[in-house]
Image (cartoon, rainbow, N blue to C red; front, top):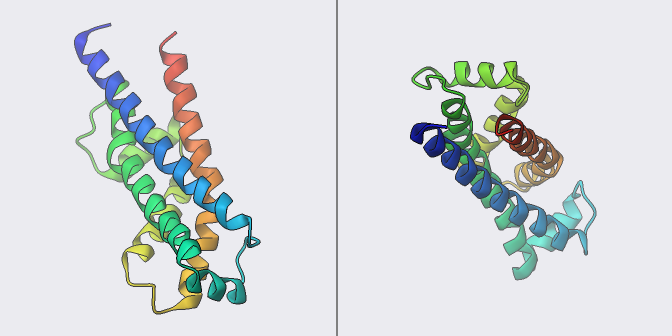
Amino acid sequence: MGNKTLVYQQKVTDSLSESYKHLTRLENAFEALKKSYTFPIALDDFHKIVTSIEHLAYSDQIIYRFSKLQDCMGAKLFKSVLLYEGENINKPFLDILNRLEAIDIVNVDEWFELRDLRNEIAHDYEDNDKTAITILNAIYRFKQDLKEILDGISQFIQKENR
């Protein structure tokens, strides 16, 4: 294994570790809220969340960690996987996603749904309860998909290292 391969392997490992950290914190925040609320969250429960400093902090953490996770995966992890595989990453992001889909790591359509959700979060949602509820419920629904992508990358890299 050459030095370049080791560097790329370390980039994958570091990006995967960072992604799992965001996912774990996102999941922990959901678990804390699930002690008091049922998901998908309803409007009356959402109003209770925003009136509790602690529960609102968990809600904000979920949104923040989802955004960080989606950013890390899209900007770092996916590219590092392809670099590790010896591929050129100087191409449009859609081509990167298509290659990852070809090696059964990500579904392109699903990733664009996640990106759309991330973009929706980037806009000011705090003045619209229905939008905020939709975002929280969507993150709750998608968190398992994100975990499966990370687990798939982890398994793919382990298989490549044998």
